[in-house]
Length: 490
Image (cartoon, rainbow, N blue to C red; front, side, top):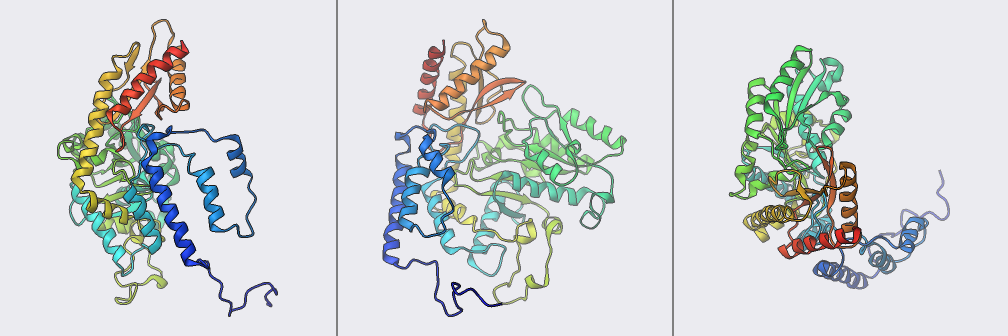
């Protein structure tokens, strides 16, 4: 087949490297300087600014750029139309959901990792050793054996997915990889009614169906009822189901509650079930010796998933799943085609350990920002900021309870405060609408970013303290702002 006249020949010298390295170096320095200045001055701006109509139209309607615009022009548009309009999660007064804030060092680590562009399936290279060392450090912090298996993932959902996949492989009782779900009875997985939505997504993705996720009632403390768990397992066995796993939660998404992890571990041991812990943010309480008792029993889990872009304060994306039994972990995923055979020498020496621990073959160098952060700041410093967030939540819970008509809707067990406003002259429905209106005005006024949810069917404002930039002055500004906004509604 003859190539078109316009196509380059084999002897062409086309590249996407800069034509002028010095000019690009100046632009790159400007990018770094602008990014650092933006981070330095975050507190001078509102956490969130709605997109102007013109900016929205410019981004939404831009045609495909077939011809070059140049790096300077592309960056100028980024600086004007993209950088100023984020959801605000880096800001000191961001307490919505539980989202990471990132750090300047983490930003630079991602730049360094992108510059290396290492392929982290494994291979014989330093980045693999850094990744293995970070997993070993994390296992130590979480009370897992030093030789635990693990892999870094994009986020908590993917880390939990890997943990649940290993659980299913380990406890299904038949050759799942060969036979599929048709090879055995219906499988059952147990979790509190407060479990994150990842669990439903995963059982559905695995072809087990949402009815295989057995929701265990939570008590007034928002923790799994272990007595109800035992009863449900017995009933399901009698009905012909095969229980395989219990998911304990260390820091529920709504209220931050921590399940009775020792109690769940006892049930799993007695019933020969896999014990998986979703520790998305709460697991990192283990970084702090003073907070570690809050997650007692987590070290008894067979697998544990958690995010470092939440309470590790690192930029997206970085999560981890740890599995105590390396053989079972790798047995769930390992596939070695001829083109990926470990030859014992050369670039592929040592194989592809991370490809054997999940569904991804191509992976970026996620561990570098953890490695640099731990070494530069020290884990103790990170632990102290986590402790500060918990202290802030406890103090804010006390303070908000003194506001007129305010009701703290759940125990402040870790770092989340859920509250609503309940004027006695209003019906329950009116109170919920009133609370929601206050929340939206807090966001839209530029005061702060808090999120909404429901506790026992009632709408609540949810303040999640996982921000390393927050000071108590920020919480006092929120308290004062709530009073102003309420008076403006009245």
